[in-house]
Length: 199
Image (cartoon, helix red, strand yellow):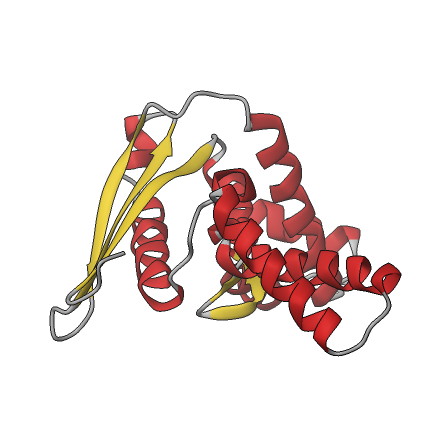
């Protein structure tokens, strides 16, 4: 199938990948737009995995203040070079993540960072709910495990559905950015402030 410049542009608009990468992905998938998108996302995933061990000592601190000034977020995004730290796409990603945190209020970046007492408290609630509904103990454990998995995916930033595009997780977006920038990028920490809130 002939790959037209219009097809390449459409794929580029969808994925923000380089022009040559888009052309190659379309060639490799015989012009199938959806398969080409998947191929580019997999490539981003592979690049992200390869670069994951690299130090991210450069970066940017970005803020988001919600209209009215009652809610604000500060996020630190790390990268390998100051060249990437000054890149518009990198900074836009940092702003988008700060806005996502303001909207969705994650507890931690990864599962490992979720305080054990939060997980234990949720587990106790789920166990009690299951027992109160008269479920046998053998089933209760499976139900609770499933609920804990869902709970963690909803409170961990990297696993959350991205607020602007629920088809993607924050991790998917991060992988795409790593693939595009060609270096390791990490969300290092964040703080969310809300007037009247003590958390």
